[in-house]
Length: 179
Image 1 (tube, rainbow, N blue to C red):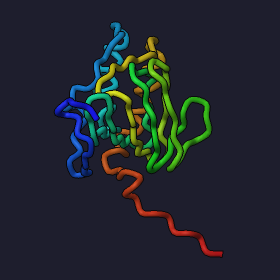
Image 2 (tube, helix red, strand yellow):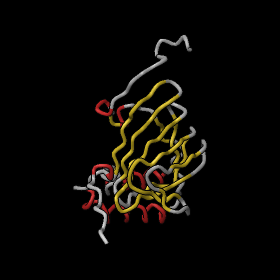
Image 3 (cartoon, rainbow, N blue to C red):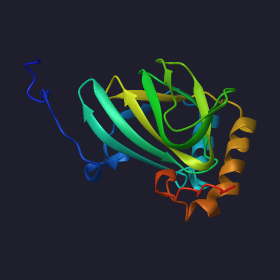
Image 4 (tube, rainbow, N blue to C red):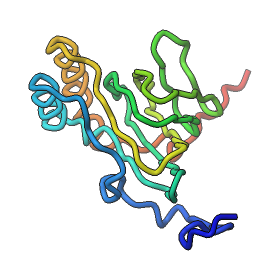
């Protein structure tokens, strides 16, 4: 057991206490150049923020848990983090790189500084991100304007539909077809 006063041996956290990720200042953008800064600005203007909801579920020194809801067809740009991350899908689906589609109960591990990307399926995705740190950086890897233009085009195509979209865990389950 640690002697640090903020490292309690047992803690409970509740869903109604989750806070917007932006309130935490837990991630620093690094490795940017003019193309990436311009692209990130356009990404936000064209709906990047509208297609996601990122909330901090729990954080303490050396550990954090984030609940992420990316809406349908959300194109997460190629990036890396300075900390290891373990991802667990609780609802919806994603396609990671060239892998087959992942669904509820599936997950993946990404080591520190390994670039990755994914795109959500038709119902979006809710993901838990377990991190072995409470602070890390984010580095976007797509340096070319063409890659960012393709991502922004996907945002524009989905933005209107995202306005009324529910998280996949809150959508009514499809009724089984009777034979």
